Length: 349
Ligand code: BGC
View 1 (cartoon, rainbow, N blue to C red):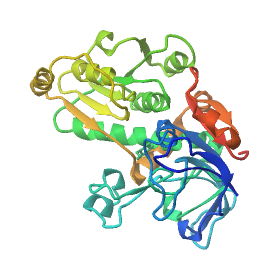
View 2 (cartoon, rainbow, N blue to C red):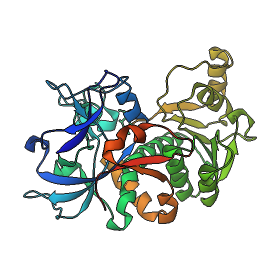
View 3 (cartoon, rainbow, N blue to C red):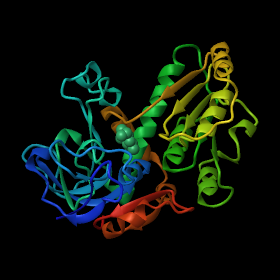
View 4 (cartoon, helix red, strand yellow):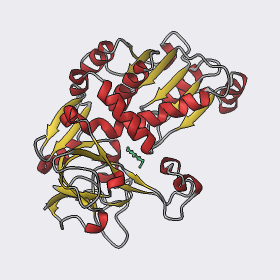
């Protein structure tokens, strides 16, 4: 079969190439790939900045935002041939640490977790893939290709759960939530917060186009420009850009008792900000919490499925702005100005 593979930590090594059929050890459920979403993590891996091949192997099959159709459900998965499924990304560490031991692999403490298409296990950018039944999530068939949005929705679901859990430390009646960044994570965050019934604001650099339209279609308010200028102090900020200045402004703009949840993974960047001790003092005096959030466990996969099932299909469909063939995976990894979610399509739904 064909797969998109890369030699991690070596830029320029990604190829669409012949690759052995998936190993039976990867699970009894055999799946035909339908589509795989592309995200910043894939770009980082292809640029040689991140990623790990399976132990003893040189190359890693890329892709962690999956959608596939079951070819062979295996002996006891409860799945049927033809079911649409998405694969959970992370596997618990083998020790296991206390969090992995209780199924909270997203909170792994020793870093020995593995991740499909990212860290030591092959991903989903291959014509066929295998999976363990307990890590295959059945997708509402009416979602069709939109099921490929499930993985990024799980990341958002976990982030919002973190914010809600922290909020419960005291009496908290959040009213306004600011989402920074109107990429797929930001827009899915805005959708999820809206479903909670809160007032949602989304900030991004662009002034016109699909992003502001999608925000307004949700009944949320769109802002372009700086967080410092939004004109109110949000109760929670879901930071989805990973950009230093936006992070710094968010920490300084958050309201009293407010929570800033960081979901973006950025690098470097020069920030013009107040002295750190002054920023910290303001956070102390206003009981602020700054929390990082990564990955998702089964509870989040379940809830994310509910979010997508409730969402307006035509709104979700506008998030997928480009579909590329696997042989043009390099084009899929390029960021074009109007891109929101680009998917690599392996077969029809
Ligand atoms: C994925 C997560 C993963 C994280 C770190 C993200 O792009 O969506 O599942 O945990 O990268 O590797």
